[in-house]
Image (cartoon, rainbow, N blue to C red; front, side, top):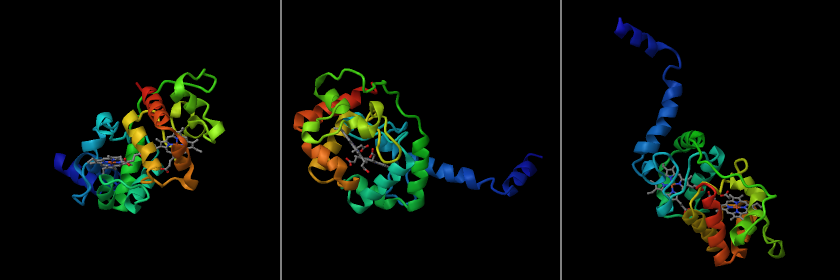
Length: 211
Ligand code: HEC
Ligand code: HEC
């Protein structure tokens, strides 16, 4: 009886196609891809996909799928230059990268404190985040990254929910021209206009919104 029921399941059209797709992404995430160079993402990005703050490994959970696929392809092309992610991105097939992005986008995001623009901004980090520095053509970060920096669509990634170490490393990557994957140099212009103290303060500010 049992055996014939299983046999019947196997012949149901589609019984294995959909779950196999989802299972692949889960497998690559926790065990690695078909090419051994695609090291299991969870090793560095955490089993919950929330990253490892002290090592500067970013959160991937809850980031928009199109943003994630863009970053993987930018690592591959070198417009976002990183020695750790380059070989991993190269080892992922197009299908694996897409499946991972869809799965990661559905993983739960960290909770974030709500802050709206009417809030009285205190300190250099919060002033930049909520008001910008228009005398130097720096728009407020929330204008693009959304209230509390939760991200807007697939173009503007969340800043809250990332660690201060990671945020700072990305602002510095733009200042050093190792990350140049943004359209029209929007972030490049902003990052290069910030002082070291401002980079530190604004990174700290967004990181603390998810604590
Ligand atoms: C050995 C550690 C390591 C492993 C394994 C790893 N990553 Fe990364 N990942 C990093 C580091 C470090 C960065 C930050 C790179 C930078 O500074 O630009 C990063 C960044 C990323 C980003 C950019 C996130 C953002 O907010 O822009 C994506 C997407 C990503 N990794 C996807 C993956 C996927 C998918 C896998 C599994 C196939 C994976 N990573 C495996 C270390 C790792
Ligand atoms: C005019 C729109 C705009 C404004 C204003 C803006 N950003 Fe961005 N930012 C972007 C875009 C677009 C990206 C994604 C680029 C890409 O495709 O990788 C980005 C990405 C980032 C990232 C990388 C996030 C990650 O997951 O890797 C950081 C960090 C960042 N912005 C910080 C800031 C800070 C801090 C401010 C305010 C001082 C700011 N941004 C203001 C458009 C903007």
